[in-house]
Amino acid sequence: MSIEKKGSESNEQKSGTSLQPKCIRDSLQTKWLGRNLVVLEETGSTNEDVKRLAREGATEGTLVTANMQSAGKGSKGRHWQSPAGEALYFSFLLRPVFSPQKASMLTLVIAHSLAVALQKFLKNEEQKHSIGIKWPNDIVMEQKKLCGILTEMSATMEGIDYVVIGTGVNVNNQSFPEEVADKATSLALLYGKEFSREQLLTMILEEFEKDYAIFLETEDLSGLKEDYEKHLLNKGEQVRILDSKGEYTGLAKGISDQGELLVERDGGVEKIFAGEVSVRGLYSYV
Ligand code: BTN
Image (cartoon, rainbow, N blue to C red):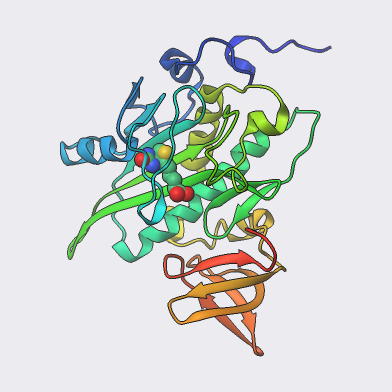
């Protein structure tokens, strides 16, 4: 017997271009993540919104999503183009009690959650497209970037005050600005149809809640590493490492429990720490 998917079960975009808060609330199955939910038509940056809420005492799991950002922030101080009604923009608040040095691993945790959620979200699509993680946290489909993650932290000598994880997913974008057009893609461009951003958001949050619980058991990536590596596009590939000292190539073997990229080079294995370097394929972005 086949059951037709209706309303909140379908992953297709159903109505208008504004985000539907009710649709998010109705399908959200998390315990704490996104339970304090703010849905905005327009904002500067959802990361900035969550940081402000954090300073005002908001609870862990507080989430802000917006239909449009006028000052979307990308990594390395770049601007993240955030047109209305196209992509998914959201940020949420964590208040971890572990040491600030461990926070950088959270970007690999959310990358894993995104990869798993997207695979589930797209599993019934007839067209198949490759999807994976470019270390440490870019989600890539057909060699082009689909999602970006910006993690920000406020910490003192005593520990972490808060962490904000911000994510942009190119869902229904029909085009990209010239400067990123050759590197970026969207689900709509790949599949030729529009998808429900609300449904995708709730699936991502459910995956993150599970992954974060696994991460907290050991406060490292040992529990997620094996599955993260299954999604890691760099694994077994030659990579170009660009750091402050120059450029070299090596063979990417996987990640360490701390999330460093393990690169075999000159008979040894180097541990590459995210943040200090750029990693590229030999002939392309991945
Ligand atoms: C990157 O450059 O790859 C990171 C992009 C992160 C963009 C997201 S969109 C939601 C959240 N709010 C922001 O201002 N930035 C992040």
